Image (cartoon, rainbow, N blue to C red):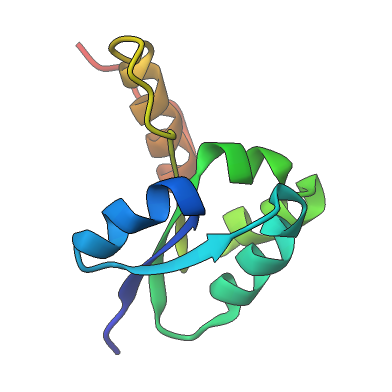
Length: 109
């Protein structure tokens, strides 16, 4: 079975993902993010699901937990474009993804 990458984003950032060739589902209202997330996660060929962080924060905790517990799709939060400066805590973010994927904490040196 082949899997696809899907994106759940706001209208402001959806165009950029479309230009890169990804399948994008736009969310007009943040309140609808949970419904969109459940629908995309239920699609059989969705392997990786990129979700804008602001939308993911609006998803009810029960829905988010349900999707995160599945092996497929892999849920990857992405920050909205910000022009203020470089993001901090990238290493901690990667460590948390590894912890969720393999089940225990890893120490990077």
